[in-house]
Each structure stands twice: as structure tokens, then as C-alpha cells.
Length: 357
Image (tube, rainbow, N blue to C red; front, side, top):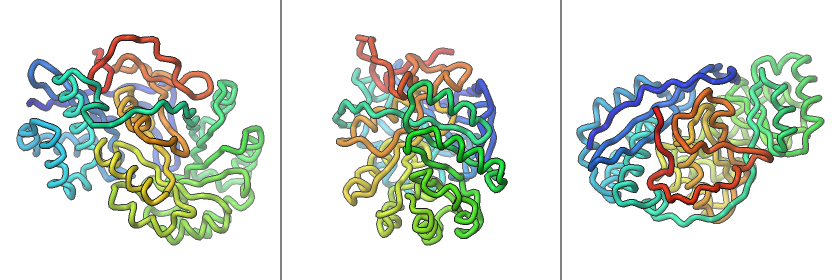
């Protein structure tokens, strides 16, 4: 088993901004694993403000552990390696995610079956629309999403939310939408009261607020939820299955944002969802800005394995945002925020996408 890094950096069609960062191209980590004349592909999105990872740290992980990982020869080996190295994965979730995805893709291709069968998952036909994700400097795009039939919106807010002008603009924008609107603050405020004071005039216009203050300040976020009468979505504050127990005491207001990359791969994401479901803790199946159809397919497999739809699903933007998507066929949402009907009759093995240079 040979592990190689794919040096891919794909420009965006326009910049995307939020409170923690602004980017104009993908910051994704891609690997390919080769064995038995088959190639498995994996993708992740290291984010220094989420898990402390960078593209360089992911590359270093491959350098340090590729020999050890190359001894994995079966799904049993894969699960055993992940269990025995859980603490290592906790600190390198995105690095491991790309590798694990590639291994699953490879094993499925070698055995000539779709990835979901290799994972032992059932698939259900959920038709849940995806969310429209709007950066705080791209509010005009929200109008386009609305015209495209999107009914579920996530608005990323920036530091300028403190100004009355932005506040009024946001209120005006929210007023034309249905009530299914949530805000994402990316840990914008320092204290709970600062957040409450900033958003009190918007109370009632959004149903949930994502990561308003410092990550893992559960008590502070619970206070905000009560003051603003909204749910709190945990992203930077929910990074691994072990955090399910931490948030179970607040399940009346907390919602977990489950992203494959930050969770440390597909297997840990599935585990987290099962734990959340067992405790009746609601969750959103999230995505990072700039994901290609490769990571999108892994998300789709996980989403379709859930017995019931989750609160919201993110992603599916492919070449709506990227100047090109190197993984085909593209997994891209259409009118109403749903994937167009797949007319392709050919059964594709692995994650069901192939790489085009």
C-alpha cells in the first residue's frame, strides 16, 4: 500500500468570508493510496481555528505514519488501527480523515462494491434539501439562493455585526425569508453578555446560533440560548465522539454539527451519530467550505445511512463555488437545494467518483 499526497489547490469563483477567516481557494488535503492496480482517494479540510491543523501538519502526519498505516490490509485492520491510535487521531483528525477515506475507497474498489457496503451500512432514500450557506460579505447571494428555491439558510456573521448598519441590513434580509434561518458566529464574541447585547434586537428572526463564543464554553452558550430563545449549534465545540457525553446535559438546547473532516473520518463520524441518536441529541450534518464531490459523496453515504433525516445538511456546492471539481461525476445541488436525479445507470465502486487531472 503506497500513500501519496495530491497537490491540489482549487480557486473559488468568489471569496468566502466569516468571522474567523477569509479564503479564495480550497484549503483541502488530498491523498491517494495505491494497491493491486487500484487507487483510493481521500479528502479532508484541515482548519487551524477548528482542530489546530494545517496542510503542512497533515503532510507531516503522512510522512511519520505512512509505513505503519501501509500494514492495514482489511476493514478489521483499519478499525483496529483507529481504535489503538484514537488519541493520535484526536490531535490529527483531518490528516487521518483523508487517509481513512482513501483506504475505504481502495478496499471497496478492490472488492468491486460501493463504499457503503464495505462499511456495512444500509442506505435510505432521504430527500432533505441542503442549506444555503451565505458569507457575511456575500449577502446579495442570499437573494439568488432564495430565487433558486432554497428554504433553509445559514448566514455567517462577521465582526461588523456590532455596527447598526450591518444589524439593520441583516434584519432586512432575514425579513424576506421563511423562519428557517440560523446564524454562524465562528466564536465571534468574548463573553455571553456581549453576544446577547449584540443580537438582542434580532431575537426571534433566527432559530439557532452556531458557536457564538469561545469553544467549549458550554455554560456560557447555554446562557445565550436562554436569553435569545434559540438553539445553540456546536461546531468547534464538538470535535469527537467523546464530546457526546459532555453535551448530553444540555440536549434541550444544544445541536451537534457533525463534519467528517473535523471528526477524524467516516468511522468516527458514524460512531458519533449513533451515540447522538441513542441520546436523542439532534445534529446537523455539516461540511467545510470548498469541499469537492469526493468528500461530498462520503457525506451522502453517511446521510443516507441515517434512519431519519437530521435537522439540516450542508455542502453540495461543488462547481457552484469551485472553478473546477476534479472528482466526477459532480455532486452538486440544484433547484430547491436538492441533488438532481441521478440518471447514471453504471454502478460505481468505492465512493462513486473518479479523479480527473
